[in-house]
Image (cartoon, rainbow, N blue to C red; front, side):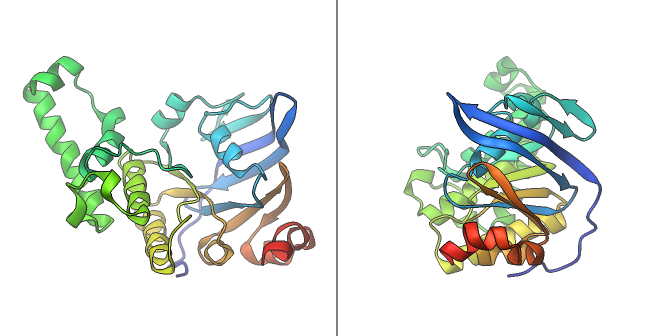
Length: 264
């Protein structure tokens, strides 16, 4: 499935400059710079161990780089804080699903609304007027996401009983419940069959196209990356070896040698 329409790609909203990250002397990222534009789908690719997930963790504040600077919507930061990232509209899915397995699909997605809830815990516990009205409004939003992702039939099913592909869809739903401006997706199609991948591609394209959400995507399926991405940055052993449109990256000899040529 390819991009269905030409979205208006905006100005740079995230700029990563000279990012370096080490763990006990082991370099995970070395002097990496690239940017993300509003409304685009920006892919990060590379072999296993290239530093892709580490880069997402830098963007949303899980890791704090030893060197470099992050600029998000014009605000310069030495590093990002996880809470500040969430409040700034950056949502994240994870390579290893981190859902609440004993909770229903609806309740898992509802947890993504926590930051939007204004009433205090006392009011929520007693279901007092404002808290009750607020919960109804948030549940309506969650039901919209459930409809969008076509998972009405499992809305009350405990997540732990679902097959892997549907759990991935619920994970996306929880991230969407945060009303993100930027969505970070860490291998959203890992472990899926062809049909499930096609569905996930469609949801990602619709999120980007209909909601205007900027997407930063890690994905190993090169067919998917080349079909749905506007630009691609390529990492290898924690260093950037390519950056450009899918066609430019496809023809980059360093990329062919380090990644495309060895795995495909």
